[in-house]
Length: 378
View 1 (tube, rainbow, N blue to C red):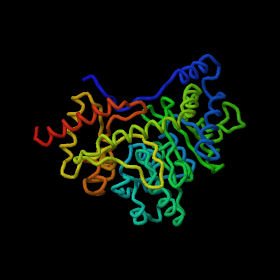
View 2 (view 1 turned 90 degrees about the vertical axis):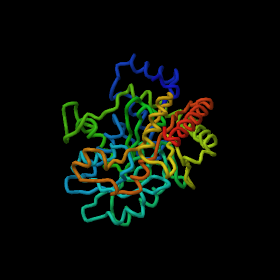
View 3 (view 1 turned 135 degrees about the horizontal axis):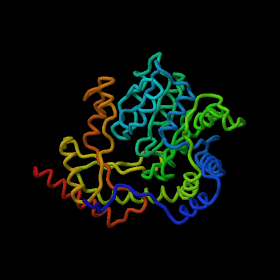
């Protein structure tokens, strides 16, 4: 069916198109001047000493883990309520992900549940600012400091979020952002590592470029590495998008406020809210059905919304119950009860910079009608 309201949309203007075309007219499509320009601008915006551009958030997370020498036998504590990349990069190193359940309000890893997961094998914590929410990051950092653990901050969904005035991406030893087209800003595909650690940054620079050193030749490789580079084409797009990021954040906040007002009287759902002492850079707008609804009813609701041309999605299915995770680790329903309960009732509504009030009203009206049908057992 033709979608009347789409789940996400990038915000591209003639400025981005012109910037990309300028690179295409140049001889420097990769490893050219736009790469350094983008990295410098991004480091300045986030407030970190180094920024290393890569071809995806997943690649950035993995390179941080490689630079920290995570390896088989190591354990890394993270959240079961996240996109699968958070777990995949840990598995790529041979280390073992160890889950701690989430806070039922913020949906981030619950700091109170981390300490019990720490063992002599624990080497790092990977907190995720889920949907752009930075709540609890300071508490996670305090735990890591007490136990001498590294933090890889998965801030792929949180560009521009702050907690107590501290920018997302500056809490961990390193932070990683992602620029897929549904994010706050996009490079088409891409990611960025940020850190103040000189050694970690140098290793990531090398590892993303087939293990080359800064001073060596094209065929001189100081270590095993990967082709995780971000082209100048992508970087040119990113430079313009980054210059507009504050307006993007404002637009997304306005859409979130629009939904909050329109859905304020809908008692069958729980709407997300911005945490205290924080600026939330909204990635998606995820509602939760009230507790009387089952996972089957949520799934039926998604189907009814799609039939009505309203593109919605189940953000997120529980990571530990993905088929390959069950097969490998034996996880089962109930292992992380808060995550399991939340995942059964969450649904992402259409959300992007330029969503209109008319579209938001249509989403509200179709949501109410679909819930009415669910309530009548249809």
